Amino acid sequence: MITLCFITDILKALYWNSKEADVLAYGLLFLWVYGVDMKKYILKRALIAIPTFLGITVIVYFLMSLAPGSPLDAFLKAPGITEEELLRIKESLGLDKPVYVQYYNWLANILNGNFGYSFSGERQVIKLIADRLPATLLLAGTSLLLSLIIAIPLGILAAIRWKKPEDY
Image (cartoon, rainbow, N blue to C red):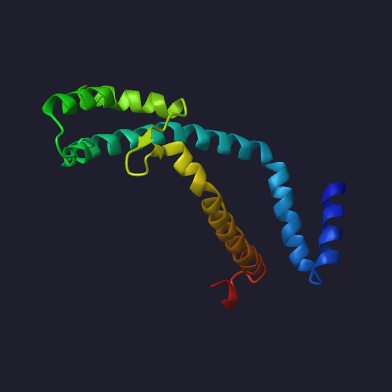
């Protein structure tokens, strides 16, 4: 409780309105008291994500296998390709196996970090992802920061002005 009083004093020094400091201090107290339950909750949600990921990948993979066309369509456009070469390419890509075997091989490769080869980019997929990752992280980080800058003050305002017009 001494720590909570110290935090309240710091928050009162930062905020002129002591009600804001009290709201923040009680929020921190809530997190401190219920922190163990929150860790369990987060762990449980993270474990639920595993079968969710598997379920989504199974559905998407099987729906994509039902879609018209094939990865071999790119090779069909090549002039002078023979039927034997197409069969060899189909076998090397594993497209001659049942869909569930293809899915298992794909999932095993993904879990081992082998994302395959892009025929359109003519490079390994992991390298294509690595090239675009910095811009993606910058965009995601900027949007997260902007949303926090907007959401936290609005949340504090809603907590302070509870059941007043500003809360709605």
